[in-house]
Image 1 (cartoon, rainbow, N blue to C red):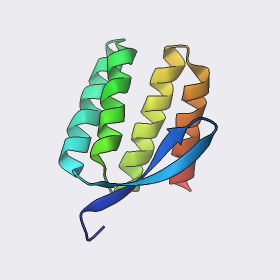
Image 2 (image 1 turned 90 degrees about the vertical axis):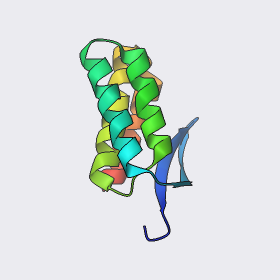
Image 3 (image 1 turned 60 degrees about the vertical axis):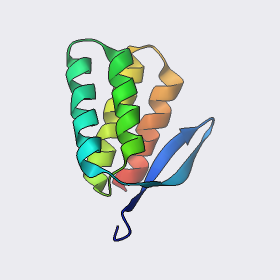
Length: 97
């Protein structure tokens, strides 16, 4: 977006809300890559923390945002938090549309 902000879909109990945040695409990517590295090592808790930070950093690249939500859903699935996993996968589907 031209004004340096992005629109992110954030989970909320039972619904999805949209939040406008200031954007730092480079930080978003670095955080997401670290989250992916941690999850590949089996550290899903810390991986999820990095993915959530990546979402807060923001990006206007919808493919990147979709991938982060998908990875976050997977991390919560492996942590056994199926409701949160579903919420983040729903965010992924919403962004992908």
